[in-house]
Length: 377
Image (cartoon, rainbow, N blue to C red; front, top):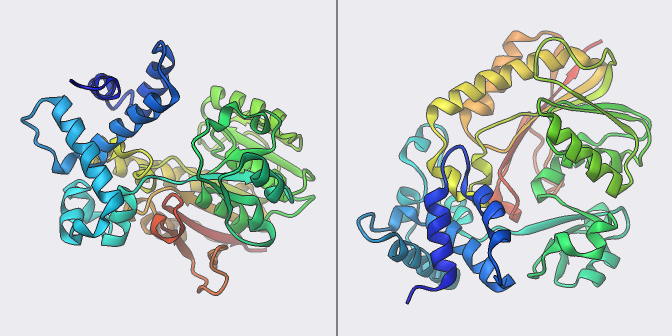
């Protein structure tokens, strides 16, 4: 007899497509299920993601229920015995073949994709230890400011906790937090988060600025900015303004900034361990179109940097067409911007580079790429 989580997973997989990916279908459907326990909801989610994570191993001719069951077994085997999967097999089956033209696919990276993703929190400054005590099942990432970066290893729904509703923490991926530490905005400065989305990095910039100075946050979607507004209220962030910006040459403000962050829309390859469905929906054509968009966003946002200010470009993908290619195109097209050497904030002794890759196999965060420039004058 097929279990309820497997049956639910099959229905969710059948309903998932490019327009409505599996994670969106899960968010829409699971709350509608009557008498669904937290354990069953968790098992359903794990079964759906296991199907896409291990799709390259499945018998496509078998019934979907059988394929999902096989994927769950493969996921459990990988958790117990990762060495039982040879490197060459993982590289060949875990990602689409076209990806080899966009990046060097290392066994370490693929193994990180096949593992269960980690949950990262950002506590209010100086409150990491107290938050860990209250939530339990938390591990501090490091010392000093990094003591407020926590990995949550429990199973409670964090969005339901009193601490979340009190604004004691934000759920923010480790390497997303790295972008804020790399930007290192100072209290009293002016910054523009040009592609703010729902505001995760905006809130982090504000925290690093001690809620002093000014941040402009923009996005092409007004509904995302409204979510930012609610998140900012919960977090006690008030040193920001928001305005829509679709990426054109006309900017939302004439302000010149100490720093501009262009966290551009991208293919999201760096999040494939969290969102394995996207492995099979992203196309090379889409990456090419995104590359053109990323170049336009950088070129249009760059003039907002004041002389001596910094411009940062970040994407959650390692694809060449969205990383080094974009940097090289900007270097050729935009004069008056000097390359800025960046260092991994989580590896203080590492070499400073112009284009910095952050990998999930390093510490368990999303794959990210960031480059920076200083405006001359």
